[in-house]
Length: 80
Figure 1 (spheres, one colour):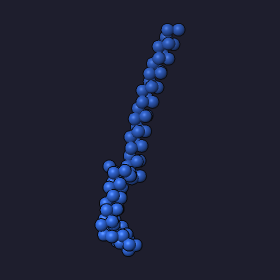
Figure 2: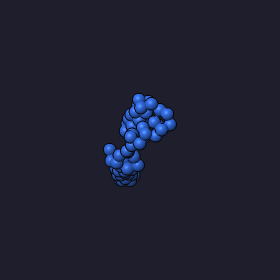
Figure 3: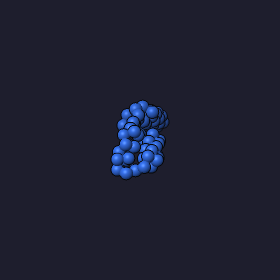
Figure 4: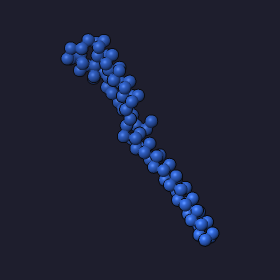
């Protein structure tokens, strides 16, 4: 995946400990959030990359449809 997201688990755990979380609670929450970020969120770079690929594929399809349409029109023009 182009680009990556970083999550400072150490700083997050430290903040949770400052507001009264136990070490175990803070570590568990940091682990869950870190996994969520890595598995479910995408970066802007990744999204841009995927959109570029989609645009390329759609351009190819549109070009193919246009070529087929021109071929059909030319064929019909010759028949008439």
